Image 1 (cartoon, helix red, strand yellow):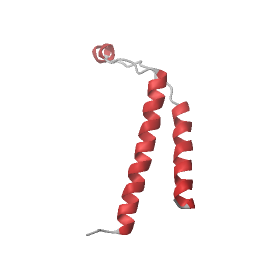
Image 2 (cartoon, one colour):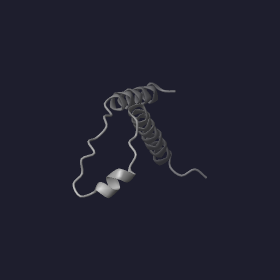
Image 3 (cartoon, one colour):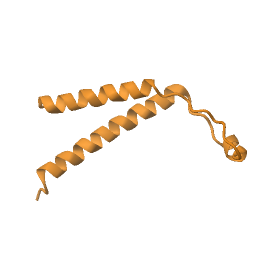
Image 4 (spheres, helix red, strand yellow):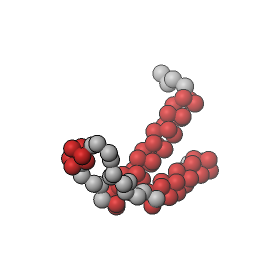
Length: 76
């Protein structure tokens, strides 16, 4: 594993941790959508943070894989 690759994963991991800690439940005050508001269940705070963390890490993995595939070109 190169230094660039290690730095990429450290930055992505720290960003994911940072945004997961900043996840706050949004206010559910909608105008005119009472029917929809009653059908939606809130996501608990730890679950929201873990989903955000997993999503950021999945995007980082996908972006890195796509970059490496594009950089190396088609392999026969």
